[in-house]
Image (cartoon, rainbow, N blue to C red):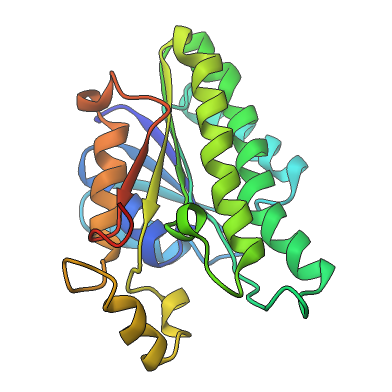
Length: 243
């Protein structure tokens, strides 16, 4: 991926950080995006390892900020080759107790921001007649989960969004795909109780939780030339939890 420019949102930790590191390891210059200064450590680690990266502070729900980011990346690098829509939040609650704000926050961050970012990078990708857009969904978006109606809706929405977009831009050699992780060892899943983890883990045929590196490897593949004939697909990386 030498010479290619990648934007990775939610790059400060967990899956996003692993994605940024693996893309940089394959030769890409990675723009690590997160709120405030949170992506600085990821970019610094990549540079220390001999890769190329820069950190950008951005709230992905800020549409004007997204446009400014993309314009700046284009001005500095002249192209955008890869967009990974990874930023996400949870606001778990049973439907009877869920506040409208909890619904809106999750949909805006997990789904609407992916629309805004994808729309912003489409023009340069279509102009250069190449590009990779990859969204990080979830097994919850495929099978549902009690207490996560907002999160499941946002992640299922990403799948439909990417399939529709893939059909629109395939003739311009821009591919759009989804990676749907299962239960992964991240800061987000640390909040799950041990009993809940044991219950979920019992549903995983491979018998273990995934790692951020497992997810990043799938993203790296979809961003590579080896995946040039793959678009509109959902690559489930879940240990067999949902088949």
